[in-house]
Amino acid sequence: MHLRLALMSLLVAQPMTGFDIKRQFDDSVGYFWHAPHTQIYPELRKLEAEGLIEGEEVARGARGRKTRYHITESGREQLRAWLNTVEEPRRDRDPFKLRAANFELAAPESAYAQLRAHERHYSREATLYEGVRENLLARRVPLLQARLQITPPEEHEAIIAFRAYAYSGLIRRARGEVEWAREGLQLLERLNPGLTESQEASAAAVGADEHVG
Amino acid sequence: MHLRLALMSLLVAQPMTGFDIKRQFDDSVGYFWHAPHTQIYPELRKLEAEGLIEGEEVARGARGRKTRYHITESGREQLRAWLNTVEEPRRDRDPFKLRAANFELAAPESAYAQLRAHERHYSREATLYEGVRENLLARRVPLLQARLQITPPEEHEAIIAFRAYAYSGLIRRARGEVEWAREGLQLLERLNPGLTESQEASAAAVGADEHVG
DNA sequence: CGAGCCATGTAAACAGTTACATGATTCT
DNA sequence: AGAATCATGTAACTGTTTACATGGCTCG
Image (tube, helix red, strand yellow):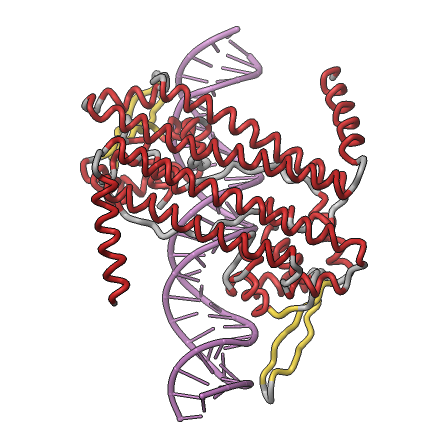
């Protein structure tokens, strides 16, 4: 259901090909949900079979062909219906915290490296999300612009606000992970005095290498 | 790999049957990872086939039989190896934020109900995790006690600290979701003045009904 | 004309969910 | 004797990942 929701929520803004959607998934929208093209194309065909979207063959150069899908009235209704149903929340799984819970079995240097990677990863994510959020609020996002163009102005504020709100959630999450990772690094240092310094030294060495290479 | 890690991290504390593991998954450990019994039993057989764990048939009453698994030396090594490898983080998916990003298509009353449910869910989770964390720190958790008993005392602190640390992460996450949901309720009220009051009134009515029934 | 992007596909494998099924044990 | 819990299983289905494959278009 989630994949369908993601696909339809894109097509509600403007008609797209499977490839366009793939790019969106690699991009901003993909921060909420994403899928490889091997999952996208079959799902689009299913949605079409159910009459929720419709594809039209479009020429591309001389012999090239592509299928552009647009949402149908029935699809729009279905999307609204999905968004109105209350899904009972499923229990989360957290592979990294599962690991962290057992870090006494890992080498301190490895735990250090893993927490560092976690910190870096979510730190980057947070920055990324913040950028997208800024762009949304400034109406600089093409997909948002397309959506606004086909929508009466009095609804614009809500559309932007909900998008930005969802990104706030991602940002909050990412920032939390960064803080948690830093807590973990402190814990490691407490349990292994001197570890942090030596690791930072070797990390700096690696950084220097990278800079040279 | 995650399921295996979860299974082995349980068996490192003490021998267990598939059923015992199922119960742990319904319980504290399940907050990091969980699986239904239909996934547990086959995976245990695979782990045994690979020599990472060993099962012994145990009598249960007169005719009853059950298989208790314990970790092997090779399994312990493998577990350590897994915990020492740095996994590159996979992109998260967040079905609820995907929804929230499109809430302009939902009825405000439904969006309200969904955010409320989200708030309640994570609020409960946070309380739950905090309880477990307290119990860990006070060494009141049987599985932890078992683990400590087979481990030299100088390692006890680290074991407890990492478990508690992982729970801190879950707690932080849950608290963040609660705050985010509350932000969302405020946003809804801003976009639909009066909504919150009327919804709270009907929620109170439902609550009263429940109390009566 | 070749590299890189556009565009789409099949198939196998792996992971997770849901439905259905069976039988023994323990407690009331 | 019946209910609740212990204990384990098969099978079908859905979702996700990974590997492999193909061909056209665009630009330098």
